[in-house]
Length: 349
Length: 289
Ligand SMILES: Nc1ncnc2c1ncn2[C@@H]1O[C@H](COP(=O)(O)OP(=O)(O)OP(=O)(O)O)[C@@H](O)[C@H]1O
Ligand SMILES: [Mg+2]
Image (tube, each protein chain N blue to C red):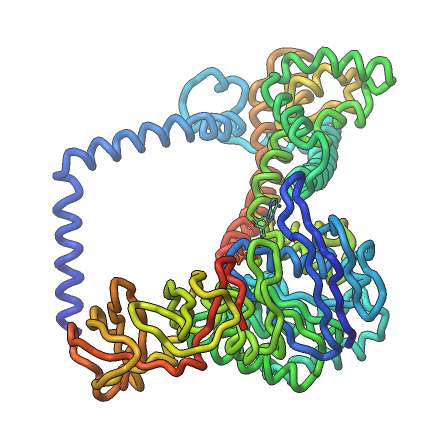
């Protein structure tokens, strides 16, 4: 177990810089999830931590020591890859034991360690099978076992669940979280699925275009997004973004004025973010009025797409008694739940 | 049950009915049969000639009037034949091992490492494929002469210890090995040679086997270069040696054919052995993710 810190980490491929100074401190035993759209540099960051990619600038520290110039094997890390990277020509036992090949320990101890890991992952009965004879979830477990067997200081996961079907993904998500609670190793987990990030992380790192947008607990990034990008990226369905203006009495948005104090100058433009959860459909008077254009029933609730003054917003309606299609409805929002962003997209608090 | 039987009978009927009547199928079978005859004829001729007495040699009959195995006993008891057979076997085996090893090593490096001049090296290797052996023997000969390799085993073998074709083939096959596999091994602490040997190579066994077959056959049947570089009969390879059956007294075709027939045995064995690996390898490559 160890702390991990990234200091002004920069990565450039030739002249193009893809990471522009990443700063992050990960506590011992913390579960940190990197999330962001495709191409934002999550894998690159992870691979630099692993030592698979050269560092163009800045520092990577594991357990306090700078590891920039150490070989991957000397960094005391283990990595689980998206397509598992387990070897088809070796049995599960060999695959799990692969990480111990170069370890200097008696053969009997190695065997014991493999059995232990297999037991934790409930793979004992499959130890002598080949990967071809395993299901996707079992293969993923072998890959995790292979990483665990060396008892590394830091676990690195690069989208390990993206090849699994939805149900298995949910299950493995839970298993990895339980595993973390059990072994307590520091984990860096990369995904582009915000649900995965929210459900597993102690802290989430949201990245975009090689910059960190926000670092925070799931609750923080959800309730206090640092900017419009984070606000829209976290939470499903996405936050509604409306163009508004600061007035003397509050904020004018979609033809209504909502009473809410804001630090900005009167007359300046703001972006108003409202989570679909905070926008409820009511039959009688509310903050906005509009017509329902599309309904998406989800069971417990129904998503209603409502056209308010030329802008479409998503609101949550009751699952049992949704409004009829094309009905005129009212939407209410608690002014305290509005998220305000300035012209640059930075949150106004 | 009866239904199944009835329907399979119906199926056979339609097949039987379709076979001979369909003019395209007649054409198809004719072409295939012609192809087969062209392919098989020389082998049949070789086998038939190897069991003939000299007096029957120039008759074109396939089945000899007086078949005999005397040619085989003669050839096998002739020390020269066994010597040449041994030479060929030694040379073909060593060159195969060496070429497969180095081709896979160089192909891997060209495929999985980025370094300055990689493309240039690759193109340089490929360009040697365009030059026919007939042109290469002259520089090879001059080289062997100045290094004192003429009339030695090494002299026969050195042009084949690595092949451009094999390098190219292996490079292409290593493209199918995901980088993740190699990186995972790197994190687990293997050095680059170990990664190549215990991770990358096992994943390309079909290509290795195919390459081994090609190279073994190529060296087993090689004629021009061994003929040029060797002088003493003890160093002849089998193809070179067999031709000397013809120059010593009269042309003894029945002995040449017997030798040729015996020479096909190792190639058959090599093929049968490695072919299994090709099939097993292909089955293994089917594993996704
Ligand atoms: N070898 C390379 N040469 C040049 N650019 C590269 C190279 N590898 C990655 N990049 C660029 O670096 C950026 C970050 O890539 P990275 O793989 O880290 O993205 P990611 O966040 O992991 O995306 P994804 O979710 O699709 O995996 C991308 O814009 C990519 O095009
Ligand atoms: Mg990635």
